[in-house]
Length: 123
Image (tube, rainbow, N blue to C red; front, side, top):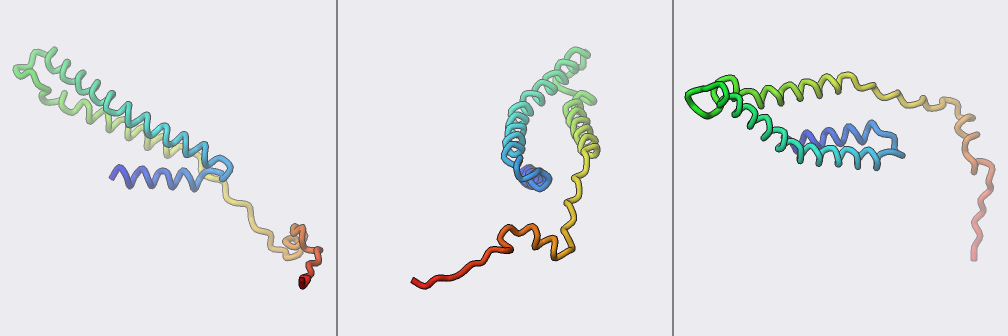
């Protein structure tokens, strides 16, 4: 699922980026993805260790992570996902593309080679 989601996100990023900035945006996106892959296990392990410490500090009979403390890492992840979805919902929409000119004369006036005469020469 992660591979499909990452590919879909990169496709959306590429289609919403101006052509002149695609390289910079792709580089930033790949850098952020790599940093999150590195930070994810670190943060997850920290939260899990904190949950274990809370369970042991609460004088529970078993020294493992019982009841509510078991759900602490998953609750933290659910909160982060919800925050990311809210942030995505607040992103601005892309501006519509400029309309194409309907007038044929306008299209021909923009062509620099419209008045050029090309002749084929036989050698």
